[in-house]
Length: 569
Ligand SMILES: [Zn+2]
Image (cartoon, rainbow, N blue to C red; front, side, top):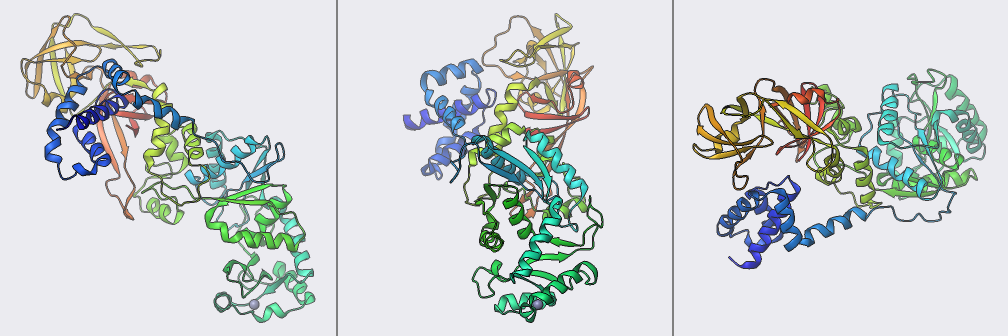
């Protein structure tokens, strides 16, 4: 094998080990090599032996030794990462004056807030901050059929968690009288009319680009019709339509709905109103009236820009700048209510805080930090390309935040008992973090130690292992129960370093491991793995919500005394 390739393998192995607590694996390195050097895809057999050898030699180095080798031979690994961290911030806004920018985040309270809401809220708040302006939270609540207090409250909780501060908070429904006033203005200038056609006929006319007979009514008839919407007409019997252009190529412009009758009770206003504005009308009036200078929406609303501008022109109202960004969604983690609701109803997913979901509650419960979401969203910027982000992209940002503050704890799965003779002490003190001063914890021990089944299988008789934080043990017997003898001043190099818990006060917990929820449009039946493990008694002293790094396993968030959720590697 050529020297260049050997060097490349060693570099990748060191980098991977360095990023994962000093350990790497053959298959990870192989995948990385094949990813960057496709010419080896047909030569896996030729390189796998060398990869194995290099991986094993890298794994035998201590973390400090790995770091030293990287600094001496592969310092480039350490450099570009800093650059990625620095690249953030949004592109400048068109027509923006310092101190005079007003943005808004207008969520509809018709579902639990998710990563897509986070993106919109963060971008709007960030722009206001960039220009020393204001950001308004406007609860867009003018469709009583779909909206609930439960969702309204969840949105507030989610935004608080994200740490977004708004300069003012309002509801679209605060301005119902204003909408009626503007409707009258449009009716009286002949720019809106009452349509009593059946739903199917309206769709058919739209497709065929034909006006209906209602559009011929005069202003007096329309005034009467508008009045009747408040008293006589039933839902679906009459709507107010904007006089757009039935011949327009942009279908949105073909005499869209401005008002409709809804009988459902509004979650705060009850039955006070029965005629409700459409989304387009409400957003046009509100953005203009609230003094919004820059109104952002996700890309699927782009065709509605023309309509909003036309409505505001018809009313001689100020038009804000309208900007668009792509929806944010993770691969295999849909945000659509149409998809998520049935999963919950069918019990495939427990609730909206299930760690497999992209809702803010779920991300929080999984151990994703709000600062990481913010950095991640800003790193995406304002791109309009509708790509699905891989979840690891967010994980990479999150890792930096959790790594600094996560206490390191031991945890073993499928445990095997190891009887250790000759232990010279009954208590060990172990630092809670390898670098940062997060204090130490005491672990009481006796001669009965538990180690992971996997580790137990890999040790041989008459070989030494190192129990992390405790010392070396010479294994004298393997099998269902292992036996060994404590070795004083044992050699640290070239022996397996193993985590352990004392049997007498080990604490059993369940770790939930969320996996991708959908694979190729299909619900993944194996998307939630449950792992029964034993950890140290110190786990019980941690607060709910604290982030832990289980050594050689990954980051987890304490969900309760008996359950933790896997955050990521
Ligand atoms: Zn009609």
